[in-house]
Image (cartoon, rainbow, N blue to C red; front, top):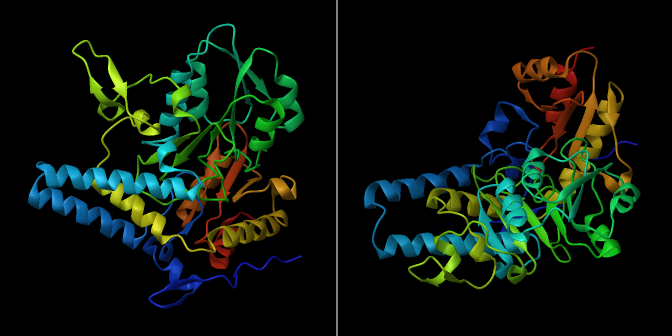
Length: 372
């Protein structure tokens, strides 16, 4: 059955309803290419670019010193923290600002202090942004197939953490992370790189949730967050200036309340302003449209290639397929035709990222560029 891509949903702009075409027009790059790789980097909107340039111009003209400057940057940090918290139904007190999902994973693994007698359960389809952090832990890492029953079977009395992607970066399959947390009673670290901004995500009931700003949120490079349900139960393995209320000459310090104690570094004002603009760009119907266009993509590709399609209730906005020939060469060929997708190394898969800005025309360009 054909799944319609254009939806009735709209958002209000300047007192009237904004159409899909008007929302899409915020991204000039879409005039040139079929941008189907938000799972790596999302497109940049005009408002994001303008916000970033305005902050850089301010720094250039007025300098980067004085209380007004620092207060404005701290205000931007708190505005970004609040916006990201609202996105995942959390509270700003539980959100740390990071530069990547990898940052968030390292904060958690470093702070848990797991030892050789402990175990972590993860899956075969995790990204190194998560796996690298697991590899530095002294705990034993148990790898299971990304199936509910396989993950549950891997849990033992020594298991101290489930480390799972909410959406697998390989096939786009959605894992039941909250249900696994409830069934096992074991803390869960959720890699939200391919879920937050792509599908509805609620941080409630999740111990740790990472957020990538540059992917589905279409924010600047090196922006993101970590949501921590109970900051007091996680150690501070890599303190920064933002971690403390006060400190002693020996380096001991009093932690700040909440997850802000895990903030790793100073983020440029241009990046924070760009992220806020990107979040404000998202229309109310973003999730509905992205889901519909991803389903349409699966339908169109299935007539031409082998589509790796999860069960209906486990689908996201990532669509993976296999085609004859070398995947890397096909991705390069598609790129030359103005169709941007990516290869998943060592799997033979090519991945299509369908966002709220994706149109029928983008999918038609993808199909037209595939070899016959």
